[in-house]
Length: 61
Image 1 (tube, rainbow, N blue to C red):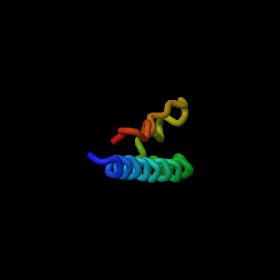
Image 2 (image 1 turned 90 degrees about the vertical axis):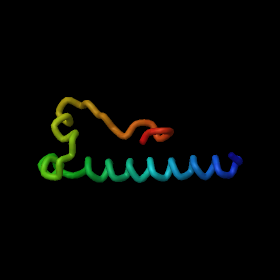
Image 3 (image 1 turned 90 degrees about the horizontal axis):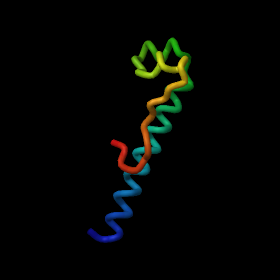
Image 4 (image 1 turned 30 degrees about the vertical axis):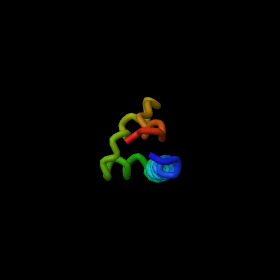
């Protein structure tokens, strides 16, 4: 594996993680009622403050 393919793979993973983060952020900005309507799994956990997010961008799939 060359260094360029490694850099490309890392950049692709970073872009995917960034897109997941932006999507999660947009959904979390919706009212709780809408989050429940679309089936967002963490809508019920928002009262407890527990967050099971997308995790670390490196290797989170």
